[in-house]
Every structure is written in C-alpha cells, then in structure tokens.
Length: 197
Ligand SMILES: [Zn+2]
Image (cartoon, rainbow, N blue to C red; front, side):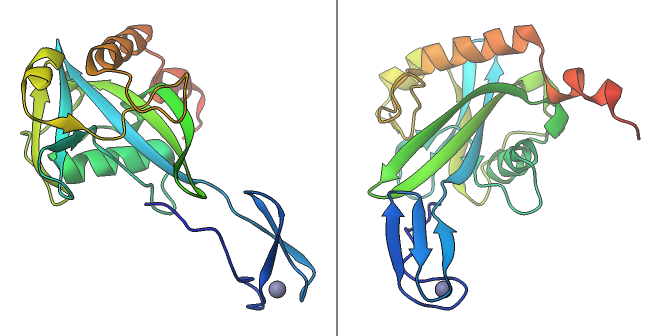
C-alpha cells in the first residue's frame, strides 16, 4: 500500500500548492500546511537454520517476498508485522520477540514513498503449522540456493546502501538476520524488564 500525493486540502477541500517537494504543501484558503509523508510498512525475516521463509504474492504467481504489510491503527510496527506474519503464513509470534534488522526509505513509484522496517525472528520463536493465508498463495522455507535454482523471482528486496535497488540477495539477508538474532536485542530483552505493569 502506498499513498498518492495530496491534491486537495483535507480541511476545506481547496486546491493545494506544492511548497517544497515532495513533502510540504499549503492551502491558501485556510492558510494551513499539509504534509505528504511516507507510508510505513514492515516485514519479518523468519530463519530456520539455513532456510528463510518466503510467501508467494497473490498478485503474481511465481513472485515471492518476505511476509510484510502495513501496520493498522493502533498497532506498533512490530505488532503489525506479527499480525501480517500470521495472516500470510499462520505462524504466530510475540511481537516483543521480533529483533530489529533494518529500515529503509524508498520511492516505490513516482511521488509515492514508503518507509520499511524489517525484523528478524527464529522459527523456534514462532508457533503453528506453516500454511499460506489469505494474502499469499503459498508459503515455505527456502535455502537461497533452492530459490535461485527455481523459476521464481523475488519482489521488493531491500538494499540498505541503495534505496532504489531491491536486490540484496537472499543469502545475505539470511546471514544478516542470523547475526541480528545472535545479538538478541529484541524489544523484550531491551525494554520489558523496565516496563511497570
Ligand atoms: Zn484548506
């Protein structure tokens, strides 16, 4: 999901003027500012030893991606990712067990911007049999070599060094996820001991 640049003032319906692209707009009629901000999305890299969990996108047979989606109000990013993971793969995870992996900002289409935050989690932290859900036509663990040898392609692979490129490679993504998990800096580790219940 992405959002289109605004054309009309959400307060009075007047036409907006672009003041400083691509973010800042202004309405002359009510003398107010309107901001065009990126939509936040999130994903989960679930690793099981040498394998990584991918789902087949319902929009295109043969196109796979890591489980991901857009948080719904009032979810936190990690809560949204946990819900999307369950919807797409039937695996449940405590959002607090997701470990930060990376975040990127990207122009996904002309004038449409997305921020993406991705978490890593080990398969052993998830429960439930793996099953493709409503938003996915298939879900399975792949080794990078198996996927490479198949006829399938990846969608939306991030490269933190280059926001317009989306091909970091599955093997690197898996290795970085495993490294992040070894550091064990989940929300639960960092914050839960200090939160008064
Ligand atoms: Zn207005």
